[in-house]
Image (cartoon, rainbow, N blue to C red; front, side, top):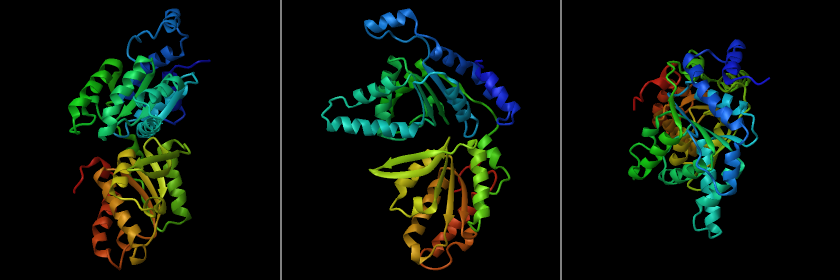
Length: 365
């Protein structure tokens, strides 16, 4: 028997999988309408229109759900995407999707295609009727120049887009280079999507970590078990999938990622020749980072230690929540050798980032 999204949500609440929230529940009827439209058989006039060219789609073609970090936006989008009974759907992190678009355009240019976006957009249109994006944000001039044309093509083809974001459309690419060229895209979002603010006062991601230990030492079996428990709590026991970021031609892989929560080993992020741009991209892409097996640092692993300092600085400035396991307490990680004195600032930041309310406070600098 087909259940409405509200009925599915209420069942999750009854099972203790979701905390009841009136603001979240209030969004579900809007998503239910999109679900009904996607699952309905094509109208006869649409079928006929398809014979003589595409008819302009009627009404909003998606939903733009925005609000503060941890309000439950991704959970609602996942509930919707899983419930829509069509095969032509895809749920993807917005950043990863745009990287796919760039890669496709690069391949098209190598084939000599004049408009490199055209075949890439067409491939998406042929694959899906529903695109569910998590964490839309535009921080890159290249993305800003592409995304408007891409969405125009998706909307013209009738693709339904549901996306979450931490900010309203008007704040996307705020203060960015040549932002005036980006403004028509904001108008397009307002015209073709329902823009809904999730005004819940509860930050669920923060609430789940409130009072919880987030720094574990030594990095032993007990630490691993505790971190496994936090991962399950933050992701709903989802196993996660790799998130691959491409920065200036380099691949930065977070082995496990789900709904803005990522998990990696120290050596996977600090044992490779990565730099500030890479770590800034990691900080943009995730809201919680689980970093395991931080070793003792010294002249013997000086380059890895420098990268670790750079990573922590990027996470700190972006207010990314850090969960970590390490060989020792922050102040005991780097006791001798070049860089030990400078590490005192990093140790202080690691201590500060353990506070229950740290991610909700402005950066101290």
